[in-house]
Length: 351
Image 1 (cartoon, rainbow, N blue to C red):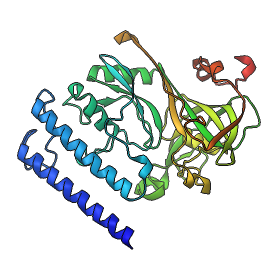
Image 2: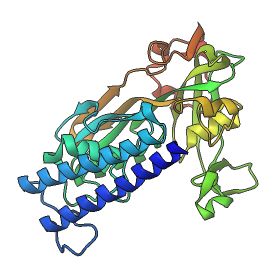
Image 3: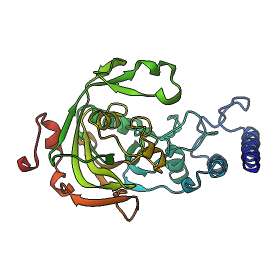
Image 4: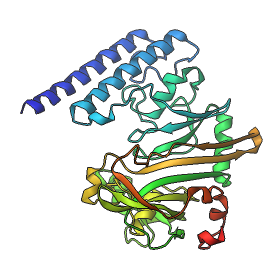
């Protein structure tokens, strides 16, 4: 009973502090009409006072929401706003190694700032673009629960060039994951199954919110081509249950593509409660999917990006993962473009 009262008190305190911060922003009156709810929408990053007040407000609300997480028991996920990992930066782009369970952006920048764009703003506010709603232009998306590399553009022209590169298949993304079960072969598993929205997702709530299914599912709506490759790397145990560390390659990048494809071949991603829903998934501290490597060729900007993040799925970082044997060495698959360009079933011997 005391715990419930404590949680309710923290919730009320959080809302009260946000209201106080909002009143302070109204008094500042920068960014347009003070009566508008989104007061800071069009502030000028060159205004040092405006930037200082914005950063103080974001830090304040960030910690209020993190304290709420702490109060409800998520004590291992207290993320500091300055905890930003920059892997690559140029005049046009920045590549961030995103933490898991962190949204890329939110609909309300100022009053729900628990997102990657807030972290980037606090560290790189001098590069913020006032014409972009989220201050920076995200060239692609990764899920809230997924960690790893994400590409942001500093300008509209750079974002347009990056979008064309994604469209023309000049960007290659590689993911690491731990999936349930063991594979019977060392060879690639090719998954060529179109993906569409679940018809029951029209309501957009509960477990079916943003739920995708393959074309063969009777509730599939508007399926689109989706091609993935699954490469077994290590066989082992996760929390004492059979699991395999895999390299995932995708060609089309549909919503939840890797999560749906691994689930449909009987090897769902560990910790993916939406598409796996095993009892063991609810005991995992995160979903075991990580954007490991990002390669992009941007000839119009005379820029080539090749970034690689650290592997989080090692026993030193996660004691629950216990590898037993190596099925394929990742070094063999560094030149992964040939795998995606060919639709045939490739084997290790053919590389």
